[in-house]
Length: 156
Image (cartoon, rainbow, N blue to C red):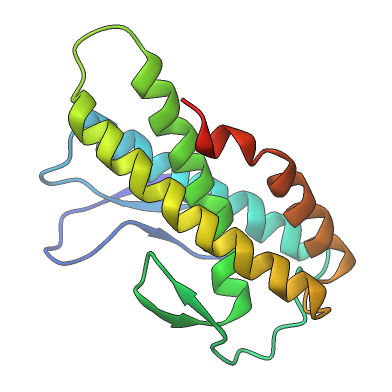
């Protein structure tokens, strides 16, 4: 279910306790922005569903790692969620960069470069968390699946 939001200053979001419901801010968005928001929130829903089977981190909620997206220190669970969801955005942008047609290619390239840098930083933090034993076995499997796809971050 998509709930359109028209409130100034509100960003799109989803909540674990409302599975399948995405609140998407509509005003001033391009079709690319709306697709990006839908993809991002869908990734959160996938993670929330996965977390129903058990935790992905041994996270006490203490801020540990810098989030390039929030520009502040966040708990490990937040870093894991951000890395997972923004990797979907990076793949979306990479596909757009290769798509034919009239697209804002300069903007796409700039955004993709920024996502690659942010993901590289957060994947390094997840590797550190893994070495410290802060990921559960399910979290390790998720991280390894993500880490195995790393080469596409740096190509294209």
